Image (cartoon, rainbow, N blue to C red; front, side, top):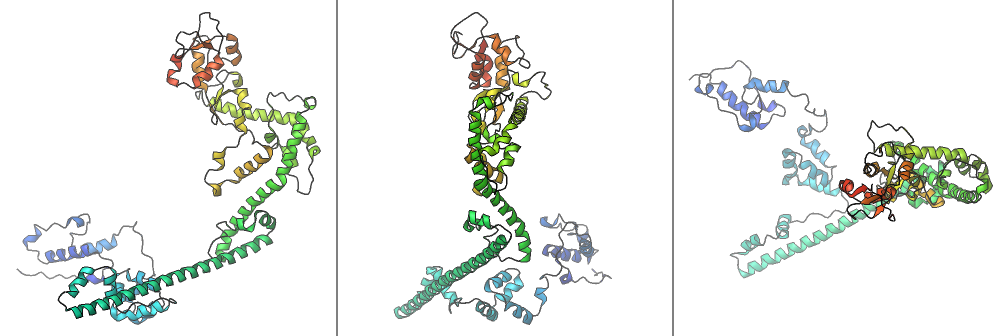
Length: 528
């Protein structure tokens, strides 16, 4: 068989950049087949290995390698230009000069990057590199002279040590054991020296970081005082302020870090100023407002007609603009009880606006229990299905009772502590401060709709009333007794419909239609 010569120049495999070993093996196989075109191997080529079958160019000839370089996927991340990719090609003299500036940990990391570096740095002939590197670390204990033997003893290879003693005389064994004891003592001394060095290094590093922190704190404090934040520093104490992560950071302040830190510090100090003003200036004035409010309510004759059945709490009145403007006047203005008299003149209109806003919030809760296409034809406040359930105390309430419910003025502890003490929002902190002076928080709805329960009770009356239109007054005037068929199947114990709605609230919705019914026969027992 005659070998066929190829006109194409030979391909130098070492010049192929980043060519996997699997590709090189397939290339050698392809080249041997293409060298013998008349061979029977052309009709029955050897299938490539399984781990190469997914590649289109593994079973091809020399041209497929070139195509693989040209048709490389575009989504593959490109290698960074420059860097240390050409470092292995640098001469040894230059490398040894560079290695002289690296510490032992850096040399160890470099030795783990590639096999050439590992062979270079782990060679005994290049031990001078490690000696020079250890010299860069102050007070670092030197390695033991017989490190391989100490490692053997330290790793408890007693079996190998016993084989070493086998066949020796008693005097020779005693000599070997004595040398082993000296080696063990050397290992212990070296270990103690290393532990002492680590402790001293950690202590020095801790002192260095502490010094950097103190320098950073001093620079930031001088800047804060120059910007006019000294009252906040005196009130909240510098110990508390310096615990902020931006201040208590072991990094030196540079121009770049300072440009990023300054807005954070400004926002943090603004929050501290707001807290200081709330606690030192606004809270005493709110306490004066509470006294003026109590005096005003103690004189019903002087209170004008506001056309509302429930008056706002003093916590809501403190948020009304006339009262809030008086509370937040400049600090040099002295506030007394009489200072709030002009604000009480506008109280009727303020109370009406407050009640209108409260009704809108309650109406949104009630309408959430109706179908989306439902449109109220009358006053939703008068509907018999306008029933609420308090999320805090699980009490069932009608409209007017919900407005004056105590839970609407209580501070929610779960909301105020959400996210931990360090993540409490400023609004929650201010609400807690205001709660301490006024004894309450502004009115906020903590209800959910209970329209379904009231609807089932009304439907138990049959066709007499429509749950979508019947009012509370109509249900009260109907005077139809209701009974529980589960507790009293005989129907002799009856209750009012309001009491019935509260009763079925504690029953499962599955049993409401069976457990509750309206009595149509005349019966006049005492109602529960």
